[in-house]
Image 1 (cartoon, rainbow, N blue to C red):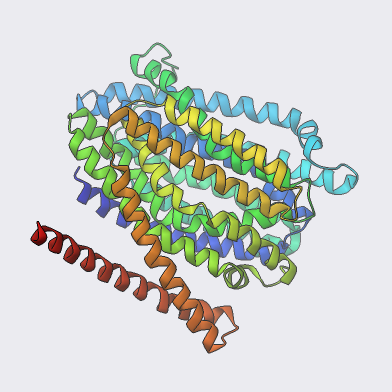
Image 2: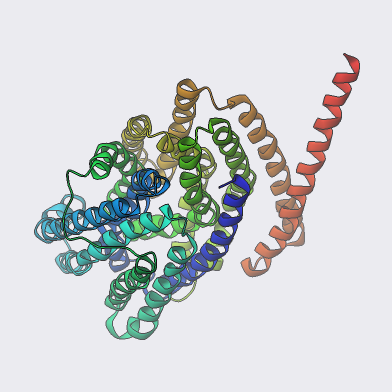
Length: 507
């Protein structure tokens, strides 16, 4: 699969993800409007930690390991062996999810008592109740992740991504139909139903691929053993990536009421460009890199890696600048309605500002991680990721004691991501010699300079116009910023070409 075809597939996925994220933001808008940013909303977001963490492990981490192994068997025309591996994974994940669910039901109260003050016994009891109701959700989420990896290995990306549309629609329906009557539990019912229906929508895809399910665990199967060997470092990377957000929310639970919600709403805004571009492109990069390695095309992998990073820089830098400089009107437009008032807007915007600072790092982190995984080298990203978690936790504990409070958690996460990016790229360079750091740095510098100039121009013009309403300000700012950014980038590119031509003439 050529990089051009990969990018075309990523484009289709981007359209689906855009629709999904739009529905996701409609969902977030309804959550903010119906439930605001209070103790019960904090409780719901804390209860979502276990299902979200399971989803991250199964839908993102496990496919990273399974895809290269399944691709090897598919290339060798041993599809029946691939089915045995998938069956084994489904069975193991199901048992693991059931164990976690049982352990969670027992340990949830002592666990949350470490981070939450039990002074308000009624609120504390409600949070424990919500968490216990939502813990069974990890079972369908876990099985969904295994099926997702199998379908991606078969180069089926579009339908699995489309199931999230139904998931968001069901959650929104739960809020609208049950939110007034059941309160936060209407949202809980919608989330649980969405997880089950999403899995049911994906199951027929395996049937159409002639999947043959087996009840056996196949623990001695060479492919299964290979996955278990590769999995620990991948889990280390997953823990590194997710523990930053998990620990951030748990530490925020000990701060002022609503702090968990402020961080969660700001993360959702920050993840818009990540979901639109980074996740979709990265989804098709791992199979593409894996096929390149299987066929010995290391030069093709290098070219695809560089091109992917530059494309993401081109997109994420303007997104990052827009999120940072227009954080307040963005929060106003998306969330400030119903019971979500101005104070919550200000506090959410401050977290969004600091989270946005680390957005560009994912343009490097995700493609290089997938290049490592395609080479079946998984320990380096894991060790670096664990170091970033330690750095993040240390910074969080310090910054939450400053005037930043919950926003200090966002700043700590951005600094840790920058550390992760720099160490990861230099580690990959030292191991493979297949990445040109200076070339990427100068491209990043060029894009950043143009982006900063364009955003300042948009700020100056919108300020001169005196626009107050975010519904008018943001579209006008985007209309000024985006064309200016690409026009200035093109002009700078032409100037660089002319400069190089003059240098050649002088020689």
